[in-house]
Length: 202
Image (cartoon, rainbow, N blue to C red):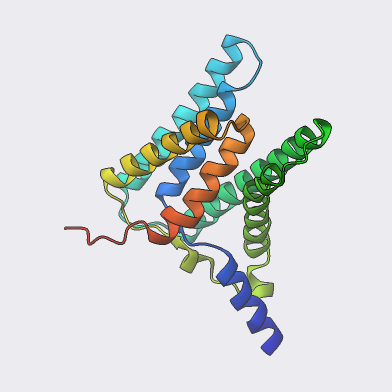
């Protein structure tokens, strides 16, 4: 019993609290990844349309509905977890191959592996928590903030994400997949933990 409680506390501490605004970052990263694909204009336009449709449906749900059930929380948690796992795994694999094949001896380049590693580990932990809620006695609802956000919250998150992509691309010279991991990492650490701290007026 004590061991299970320790596992639950460890899992709770390691998984950051998800605010609804973070889902916007996921959609933006999907769109950014599609923009990097070497495919036809038709396929790219189709993928953009799917992402835009999903974004509109989700935003409508956020701003129209007053309450959300456990099913919604599970979907959001699964979507975020799978996205983090995929981005982390792909980013680590591609970037590690890149720096090793180029014979890089710079420690800084290896330190950049923190971003995909962090993102991938968080994705694994979230999936473990979601699929093993009963086993770990994990309260998933306590990790998702579904309070209706302000439009300004979304604007700030979107601008911050664009700035992070700009910094990664033009300042740090990151490949696109590492830019995604950078944006997801900073959003998880900063925006989810300290976002929404201001008092919202009724």
